[in-house]
Image: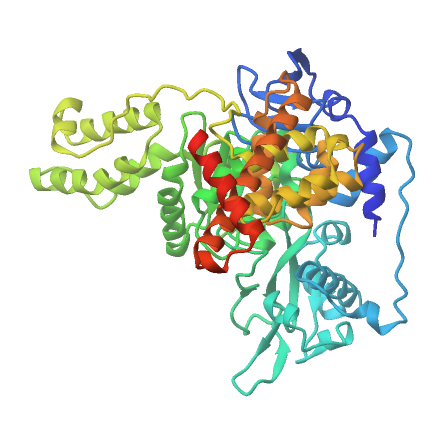
Length: 579
């Protein structure tokens, strides 16, 4: 484990401009630096880097993060690897915290992430002890190197094997993480048993779930995933994306397949830009994630009926996320093949020729709609229009939508104007581009404004500021935590303070704060802004105090008021009249 204090010191020493400039040449643009975004194709720069805030942000695709996050995204590194790389850049040696595993208290799992990581290590170790599991992977053509790269493991047969590494087998974290199941009688047992295990990683390279594949072909289900958890939502994650990011950018495309073994087998043959949906149809969230990596996505499905059904669901789910710069294509393999068997029989070169010849989305839609429709009679054409209308309604990318409409009109033997007069289709007139957000007094609360300026000038934090915070609103809580953190780290960069706040504040609040911090105008006098916000905060507090005191006194009979209360009531009354 890397000590948190070291990570904070590292972030204070590293300059994000130097880190990113080595990968993507930056140009000075006012107080910041800019470039064309390295995470998606664009002609004009919308990627900015702030040397004072130590964040990068792309206004085009929404990519945002720190120097650590950039290395993870751009080079496909894990969090630990990114920390080691940054330390090497600035000449620091990464210390390690060790745990005494002989003491039981160090084996107790405290959270979901720790539970999943320990389980992954256990499964990986068990694979080495199972000749049967190793022989199975060898029979599928997998090398030890590829299995190690994907951290493939094995969950042995038996009901409570995880009890060997989790002495507190009754821990709630194990059930919430989806590692154990409890039956109606209250008996606990391991969810995954006698299965080859594929850890599922998030964008930081952390294990968030598992997929288990049977070894015995008679066992069911063939694939078994972790359930939905606070860390893992199937509709948002793609298996293999963390490891495939660099290869996707190098190849200029992403290949979406159906199973874990397909991803791993393709990587074995040098096709390392494949990912898989996790037991669900491809969703708009998946498309949006892939769009941050590439402008070309190819879906590869088996040629059987199940594969064709899955392909159509993927196409329909992708429509809301479609943009004019994105190319979606569909590849159907022969019925007797899946990607794993096809690449093993025909090799990488032939498989990639098939990928390049994949059917574009618009062609696939038209082919599917006319597959069982001869388009000969008037009734055929009416049915064709009825089937096409809901599809065209979901496409908001102007150019893609217009070309599809023209093709549909041609097949229905109508002019584009005639078709549009018959159907309820969205207006394709492009809305005017919105200006980039600028932080103003009207777009941020007083507490949030105080918080943002303090993040930029933590040395100006004062213990006295805490007395003006008396409520429990979201803005008041984040301000209190920010002041306390700035008092501890008065000479740290905003990125360090934000990292500290991540441990104390809801993740959604942190993301919102990061975006507002990025939009903060650095040319303003921050010390003056902070002084003004401080004075306003004090006035709000005093006014609230006076109102509460006045309400309290007003409820008492005049005869019971003390002299001090009478004088206070008179002063407040005089103050009210003078306004």
